[in-house]
Image (cartoon, rainbow, N blue to C red; front, top):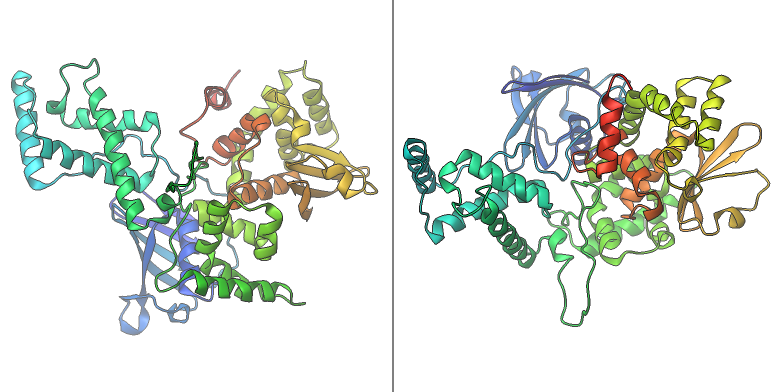
Length: 493
């Protein structure tokens, strides 16, 4: 993928192998490759009409060799992308690109939206007076409410549940752009704006909850509920956490399609293209069940067997995050590989790290280095690696080595590793994985797809994998991980 950025147009060349059969699946593929979110409108240059732009309504309309597309996203701000699509190419790997994508974080710096015409006029006059003699604007209750309402809308687009730091960021950005709104009684000038904004954001979410927004409605308390209730929200920077049902579809309609999907998975020869389409169509129902009901993994596997394949784990992760699962992890591993190994070598007092580093004496391939980096991460972060990694022999009984293992990777070893397994809730979920990095990518994909929290005993290990290596939600790190990333980015020790 090649991209030209920094101008009013974002022109990229995208190569795709087999095109999806439906426009809907094509949209999600474009969103993944172009790092876009929101609903898409795709137009293509039609050679039969002198390359005039036409709306894409069927995949068969695309030229066979190469298509030039114009892609619009229907989000809060308009974003245009001109893309040249190689429809005949067999190359579709994203591993050479960088990750990042869209995440549930406010942009830094936060861009204050335009307010209504009368509010903007008053702010302009107020700012001029402030720069002239330092006077502050005396705003009415209605004007303050209008400002807070617009800010809440702009914040919600990026994150329905902003963090404390994000509220600080928005309040500070408001005062920086409109200094006439400063509060004379606070040290920083925006303290009360911050709390007013939090209150307004709560009201804004409540209105959307009443209107039926699924991601907010899931947190509605009933009169029969007592005590504290865990807030069900995106905790791993998912951008498509709990979508509504497709237009014109009911829960009953989607459940019928789910039943067809289950039947298809029982066939001797599975039609994976049909599975891909049905999994895409039923994504909203699947998320509703997983987020609202919090079923056991075994129950999800019974209702959604297709989800437990490498192919669908990657697709579900892309639907949730708009990020390529393996591509983002492998790119991060390769970016920090040598620096991590340098840091590991400085920890000679940690026996587990020393043993892993010695493994590179016999095999210093990139794949082995990736494996050493991942296996050494809990050691380096002073967490117990036995909570995630386990080594067994081919003759060991599955029920024995999975007992007590809630989340983990099992390496089946003779002289070398001959198989790698992913374990969730004391059961092998995926097997026949090629290597530890691939297994870690599948584990991360499943934790996202099944909405499973990271184990507390390994919170820093998983935070580094997600926020440093995969670069998802990386702007909000713990102090330990933030310090580690700074060390990784230094050229010298």
